[in-house]
Image (cartoon, rainbow, N blue to C red; front, side, top):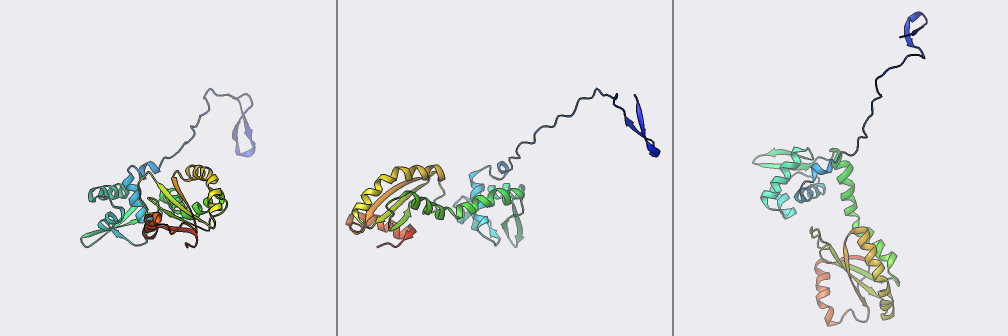
Length: 226
């Protein structure tokens, strides 16, 4: 093996003729962490995480059970799993355990937080989609149905009632419904049941059940109901 020397330090330098038989190390691409798999192994864990995200104060297991609609067993199993992966913190207060979301957890902060923020902005974005695709534009639009009731079922549907200034505008707007339905399905993975009315037929007796639903669960997207 030939060496050259580097000045007064006498450090050996490999000459051009040096060679080695050792093969270069091939590093594997790191891929993905899949950390959300740990946080959400069951649907119940998502419900618990969402509930804790929307509160800043510690909650008891019983209160989490009430808000999520889960059974006591499902609630406690979800909480235990989330505490184990440090997504949820707890403290003992007398005979109760109080739970809070660990907002410093990497996957909570970088994965769940943006998703929950998007959920909070859903109706604002949905309103923009309706306005964009429906012409002539209705004077008011209101949402009812499972999603408006905050139903947590996986199969979601929106009953979309739109009121137009004239019967002619209502009839013309029917031509937009297919494009609107497709846009809503592709953007939100939900379906819509459009109901088109005009100021001349909103008070018909056949619409009484509709207005009871609106009063009970309706979300006004824009405009003023007549």
